[in-house]
Image (cartoon, rainbow, N blue to C red; front, side):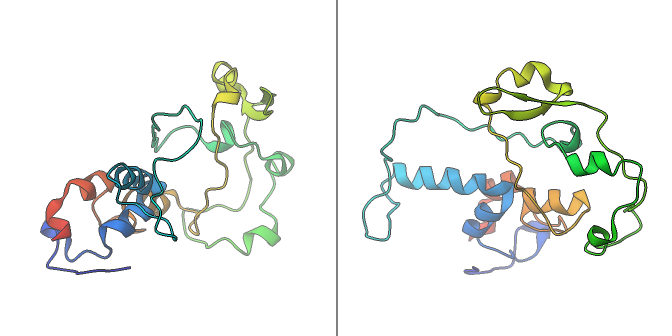
Length: 187
């Protein structure tokens, strides 16, 4: 969805998307959550029937969401995302049934798989598996939201990180924070 595109935002050239699309695509959509709340608070957010959507009726106690982007942090395989099949395939090559669907480049290896050296245990009533790296944090498993459904077409981390933070896989656009505050980008 593109609206009026103009000469651009300083040296970045013309915008490839408008503010709304940027908020939807970048930062895993957290910008859209903030925009939705702000529009609702101003009485400017309406549902299909023309009724105001906010204030929401509910009994939740959440007042804030903190988005932690930790590029370079511990691997998901070593922390919150057990991979039983990877454990079975440790030291082996990637099976052809999987390797044939992986876009290859010089940085990717499809041989000698390495499983996590850490043990996983289930914690809390929810039974969330957590590795031994986070034993103390695991004591609060029922108070933590773990998302394991993120995916990207590229097996290379950098393009996926660029997409999350800028809405572009090549990373040539301003990041989420820059777009929110770059008033010149929206004229």
